[in-house]
Image (cartoon, rainbow, N blue to C red):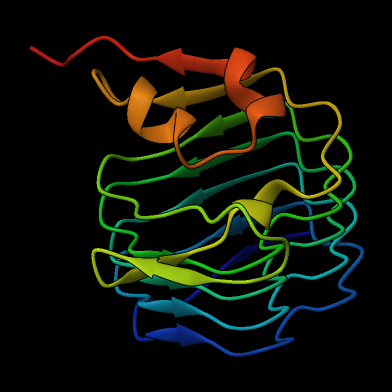
Length: 162
């Protein structure tokens, strides 16, 4: 099942699609500002997601336990990603992170602030199959300071756009 969120929606509420196991594809329009707690939790057949830059907050457990999720693209503009946002996504292989994402704390399940923007390092908790985390040009060191050391070898720097 494929779902396109209407352009008039600005927030996807907590648990809005939780346990929607038939969901395979979701299109989030550029007007959405927030994805609520557990909004897509246990959407076990969802395979990829692109989160537009209009989204400023991806709440805790937003995409947790999406067992078939293989690729996540987070566009420039996302400011806050809470704990376990993608936790338990066992099939997750590829992640594209934007520039401007803030601190990823070293303490489990605790979100701290860096530059006024909260971010938790546990966003990829229990995602054993990640093969690459793509980051913008000249952002490798930035993310190495914020991601768990077990993920450092997976960071791939994207070439600058011309």
